[in-house]
Image (tube, rainbow, N blue to C red):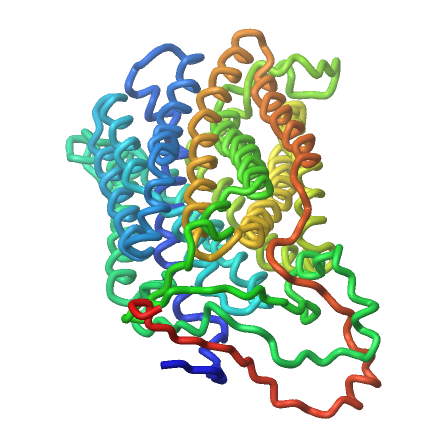
Amino acid sequence: MRLTQASRTYCDDSFPTAQFLLLALVRVAEPIALTSIFPYAWPLVKSFHIGDRSDASFYTGVLISAFALSEALTGFFWGSLSDRIGRKPVLLTGCVGTMLSLLIVGFSTNFWVALLGRVVGGVLNGNIGVIQTMVGELVKRPEHEPKAYSVMPFVWSIGTIIGPAVGGTFANPSKHFPSVFSKHGIFAHFPYLLPNLICAAFLLFSILSGYFLLQETHPDLQPRASLFVYNEETDHTPLITAAGASADPDVDLRTESYGTFNEVNLHEEEHWYVNADGTSTPASPNEKSCSRAFTWQVSMLVLALGIFTYHSMAYDHLLPIFLQDQRISEISSLNGFNPFHIPGGLGLTTEVVGLIMSVNGLIALFVQGIIFPILTDWLGVWSIFVLVTILHPIAHAIVPYLVLLPETLVYPGIYTCLTIRNILHILAYPVILILLKQASPAPSVLGKINGLAASMAAACRTISPPIAGILYGIGTNIGFTGLAWWGSAFVAILGSLQLWFVPREKNGNATTVRSLAPCLAKAQPERDQKEVVRVEVVDLERA
């Protein structure tokens, strides 16, 4: 049987708002769970009486990074598994693992049990790469990418508001709320159980919602997978007569204008074997999409993500320690300024630190919702990537000098530093993900690429807190806690240098053309644009 030509009926390519809300619900529970430990991690480690004051920052880093270490070892496995069995079961498994981790940490009575809880959570969690893949598969139109790739960082920011607030407020409740929680009850014996129970309840609700309502996004596991999605070509594109001469094949306007109308995709001829159930596999294992998943461009972007994750995690780890560390009064003024004499922190309480970190989440929401779309429309994805990478060292280098401010200016100084950091951080993460998606040779390997990216990020999150903690401990002993901040700034500088090795090239056959002048656009007759595909059905047994 041979089918020579067919017109394809468009699938629903509107923005999948309902599914993104469900995915966001699943996603938001994780940052709540993971960041709730930040305000009380240092007091928790000190309560275990392991090492002295200078050692506490190191062991705190080990505790926080244990999750990331085990996640790094299994991230690629979960990404590859999601390519085989689907995204949804892997996603829900990760949520279950995180919930189990919370319960173990909450009931821990020594450092090693708490460490085990963090390891268990990381081993079972591959959600970062899986969620990135699901976002890419949910989006059907290029102009929806700005909105789509900003949703998950936006949700993460919401989680970073709720998580520290929960951790800072409900840690050691028998001490902070003696009229409600008995000094001889379960929460006195397990002082950090309550915030973990609250976060576990969030996760349980998200697991149930995801199980019953979230749809599978893997293209080959859809209820009605269509063979037409693999071989298509655009029939008509309204161009002016001389548009071919004005097209610029060396510039990808999509990455400059962040999803405008100006891109025309020129699809290559592809050949696919289609199974009886409608699923498809490439005709040859030597196809570019399979044989070259990890191109140089993909590898360099993954490395850039790793460097960014390292110094970003160092910031998140150092900030609550620095805010709670003992304030040395002799350096609380600008008199006799010595840039290498910063022996302490700001001396704030755990509750205040939780509040500051929640406000930090609000700042991140503002940056994500207001500043991010404005700057990306103005500068474009690649320019944003370069700009924030170059400026990131500044965000780290200025923090330790908050101790030089008078008390009346401490809080304005903290929020100024957090605003600068959030602008750079919030802009960097989604643009790297978009560049990774664009660099992917084919959708069939997107899970593997995102799995590798998640493993790289997790590996960097693993080594970052202990190294930052060691530097902070050394800095405490030599009277310069800014040493740890300068260390993370140095890594951010390495990220700036790495930009020279990130190739700027577009993947696949795509070119851009200049828009019609308004007067010419009105003169063009309206056309009923349809996509036409050629489908040839061949009986392989007779071929």
